[in-house]
Length: 219
Image (cartoon, rainbow, N blue to C red; front, side, top):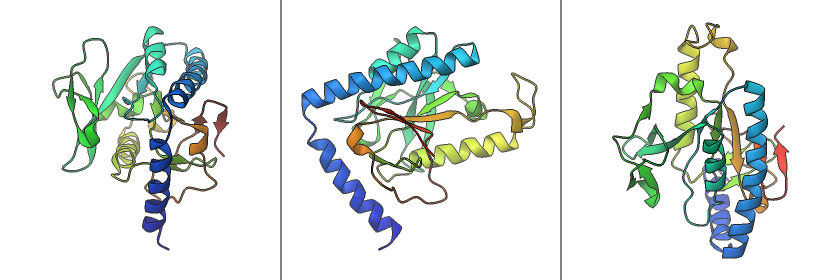
């Protein structure tokens, strides 16, 4: 079986499982996972000694709701960015999220910021501290599966390329090799962790899985 077909089957199975999540499971798991995630992000904020730059997303359907995490980060002074998708080339632009953000309907019926919303330039993507990566299935080795459109894979590879081409950090005056990559975390239901997610070289991986029951540091 090809990797593409295996991904399709796993994606279909986990999407069906998510559709079957009850309202109570959705509420309780989301609240518990957000509490764990907020504590984890707070530790990073303390280590950095400053507010963080966080790239996240607005949840959709029965996807675990990370809204409370975003509000906690914003209350702590963090700057939050959310994506606006471009269907033509499956790319994303990053836009600031706050009380003034206005929305439109984008790909998959998701709420997205209008085009005029303040944007984080591509050249500044490596300055992000945290990326909250959505997905449908994950494994303990950092494997992650999205919905198949490749938006986050393209975003991550573009960030890596920008970082590689940067000679000097504007903030620290250090060589690009000394710039820390953003921490990649995912908030999910415990049942979304599977034994192995088939991965390809271009796929984005995650470093930490945060569920309603546990914080899993990926190998």
